[in-house]
Image (cartoon, rainbow, N blue to C red):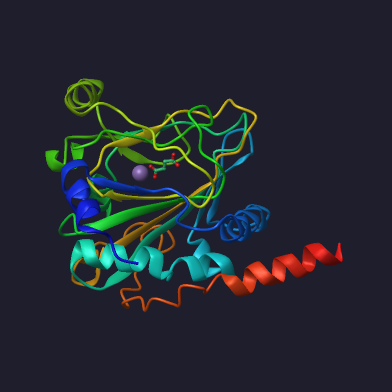
Length: 268
Ligand code: SIN
Ligand code: MN
């Protein structure tokens, strides 16, 4: 799948492209069921909120088949290869639960700020892809982004080790206010299967989810291979060390799991 000239132009200006229903309802349902499977595992890669609700499953593509297939899906590999002009490896892979009533805040930040400071990634030649596994609405803790903020470069940030269960380089209030007054704040919403591609310097955050509806989103961070990280201090399953270029699979690669799920449901 390739982005159109209009989408490329939109990306250049705003730092993101939103593609509602990029994955079918059935494909999204397979991935959503896979999220429940991984959250039920007892593994160090799976982090929880203070309440015990799941927060993030890191590196899920290394221990779950559906997430392995998504990690090499042409609907995300091809547009990102197009945007970065080269082959890609997976820098980070997170399945973020943001569970009904329990999902906690993600403070304002830029992902590349963390990758530069913590992992020594040379350039912001990496991209975030988020795929909605539940419907995302204005009330279930949607991702909020500041359009155009990717042009600000790497902004000063403080290392937040307290307010959430995940250490993050976060931006101060004055910086967020200035950028938001320039670019506004938007929250892409849409059905499960929608996909958001966003620049690794785009400023983003998300509020807690106090609604009764889950908001599961998978975030894949793809980096151009020659721009691989140079510092190996974080866990391998947070900042990956396998820089092998990803070969995109066939567009229907999730369909076998879709069919398997249908057969299982029919037998129930
Ligand atoms: C992130 O910024 O990496 C996650 C935000 C979210 O899940 O809302
Ligand atoms: Mn982020």
